Length: 470
Image 1 (cartoon, rainbow, N blue to C red):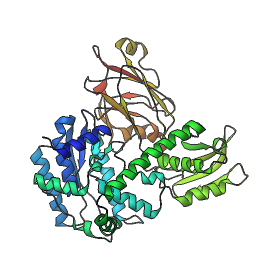
Image 2: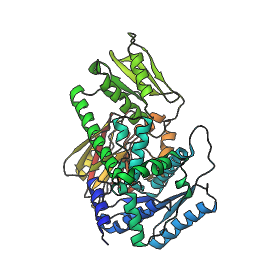
Image 3: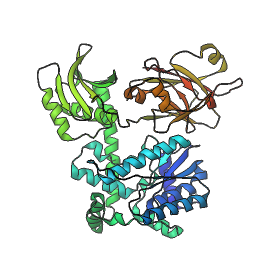
Image 4: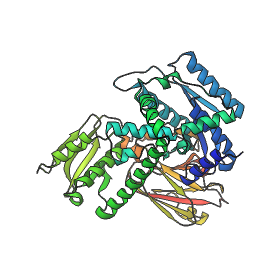
């Protein structure tokens, strides 16, 4: 099956490397028009992309029978296509300072990650469109943002992919009408008491009357911002060297290289707080840190919230900023993932978030026999069809198949009394959507593990040796 829309989305998927051959994709479906269009597109591209599909749906329970009808619609579509549907129900909204929108979004992503981990899905697809991108950018501009905020919604973040970012809501609607695909309307989407709906209907709706291509223009702004941020990161690394590093479970920024360069310091602070601690960064936070940094004291507190503490201190005789999570505060999902295409030559992957370096090398049975069991390294055997692996940290619901059966990765970590930081720093090797190995290195206190599905046996033809330095 082919159409200009399918072809354009397929080209977008390939250009952004959103999907790979053999991926199992969990499609997040609300029953609304965007998610029903996403499901239709991925079904049409299933053979072309050589992927498997499943559906994930959350019944939020806030619209009574309407919510139940949404669920039934998704289940019926899954049954008709012969694919599995995973449905979860959200409990009562707890309040406590978080909006319902934010709580529901966090619940959806958390549960999608859990389902993906438990059922072997390598990607999670959401139905964000070009119009969602435009709304997000305007909201961030209104609340105040920097170049990172102008990047908007990423087409890929870890295992989450967004194939519809290249098409508008109008194109999606026209496609559904042409294909006679049914969807469900959520009446709350018209309620402008929600700020996103206000931006969608009251602001973008009015602007679009004069500038019909406003969503495309804002999406292009996001693309340019993302290019510029990547260029800026590269220029800073080239000009100032390794400014940031991790040690003892904390993040550090060297002060000497950025002395007198407040803009560079502010950019690095924001990157560390956002990437290493998954915390929201605002201008007041950065201003307070830079203001307190002006003190001549070599040690002192620069900033503290209920989540992180920022201190000026000394590390190996060098003045630094130390950023750490507040004691007793659980880290809230600092996720990282690196996609590694497999070649016939060794590949080195630097895990920026932890400072560890993973070496991946083709190997043979002779090397396996001679060196297996060395601390900090593992060997895995791969099927011929696997063209890439990924290296990432833990996710909710992760399981690994060991000699004695399936084991929760969470339980392995608990049994070895690992703290939160060490749990989030351990590399997991993922192949074909499954955990092939656990590569903790020498510092964690946890021994290396290889899934029994990836054991090296006599006659194994495709063997990888993986080692980590941390």
